[in-house]
Image (tube, rainbow, N blue to C red; front, top):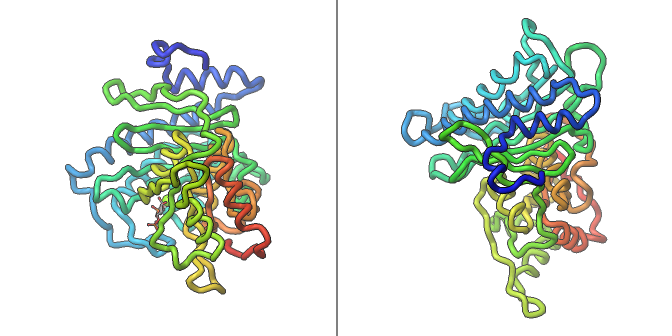
Length: 347
Ligand code: AHM
Ligand code: MG
């Protein structure tokens, strides 16, 4: 990680993974191979996302996913690509995807391993048609149950149990950011050689930002304290300018910007019906992996009332409020909610 900029430009993710592997006594190499297989899937998806405007992959398939949303063709492509790249390596015993209602067993003909892969194949996919950045998110867990096949309970582990997590943002360039608990490292895809090259070693999020990211159209559905907190960001204090609103509507892209520049992303629950607050983002596929990354980068992730990574998941597609970003900004939001009875927003 002390490489000069010149050597960083040839420092591939393969080399990085091998060096990480050597530093873990007793490493079997399965994790390294698993990560390598994932990078292949992301390169394939990146190529497809980049040419999405050129070929007939845009538009709805006509089906809806488990959340009742329209499914884009590229969502299916990304889901299938990740599954097919990961089913035969002998490193995984189970997968689960945001695009699939149930757990995804490894086909019987393939060897099974000790790891579980949870993924959101193409987050923010409603943005594809308008040429806005989208992303993939992943979380890796270790099997806890007995026997060769993973079970649902292996997926339902709190975020603190994650072995690794990461995301890929398909933007003006494609970038992979991941952590295995040893800091956060970012790699930019050089399409001319087809390699992810280390471009952002040891990423750290600024302690405080000057940007907030929230779907402000939902203002009337937030709880009162959230409304007050957002209003407070718009007031200039101590001679400082008000916070700027930056909201792409693509979680990976919003998160990535805030990770680099500092800031807070909020998707609180929707209290349109106070007896049935409806958060939008998913604990296993979105909140936990990004929480692991932000904490490794020095930031925080919370529901407003509790640390995301300590939540015991109860179902595969559980949704929770997500407040994530610079530590001091997330703390300020939590403080603004103090004294409010913890609502049951897990769904
Ligand atoms: P998706 O996984 O179905 O793409 O939905 C998640 C997306 C996030 O990327 C984004 O932060 C959020 O939904 C935007 O929601 P909204 O349009 O309600 O602001
Ligand atoms: Mg998503």
